[in-house]
Length: 195
Image (cartoon, rainbow, N blue to C red; front, side, top):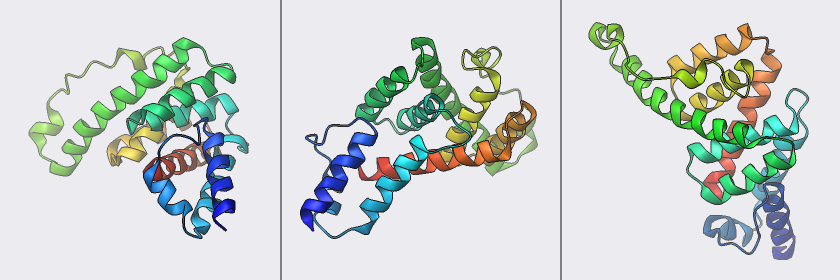
């Protein structure tokens, strides 16, 4: 059974462009047991990255990259950047993905604080956070909003999730596209937990 588990790990890592020779202690621990979870995780990652009806392969890899950047997983950032390039992403799109993730990490902390505390002073005082990248994104407004939604959902900012979900729908996305993007973000976040 261990050899089957090792094959599953190699296949799983291959889906995101990571070398099986790298050290992943949690993943290694799971592979030493008969963990049905690893098989499920491999299927989930494969489906999220490759089987979507509402996201292109390039979009899936850029969204996955935003999750990896948000979680500060450098090997995955590197491999997903390369995977996005292979699907046609430009350097400007990859850079904007990283910038979007940084901006949303900032906004998520700020707006989550406002939401949690709920005091008039904090809610009515101008944020003072520059967000010019959101005005004319290289990725296009709809996809930028979709990425912002995924990062906000991972960071647990209710105000940002509601705002970006509303905005992405107004920019023409379907609820099915939103659902697929959020599922992808959740699956990649789960993968990072065991890497």
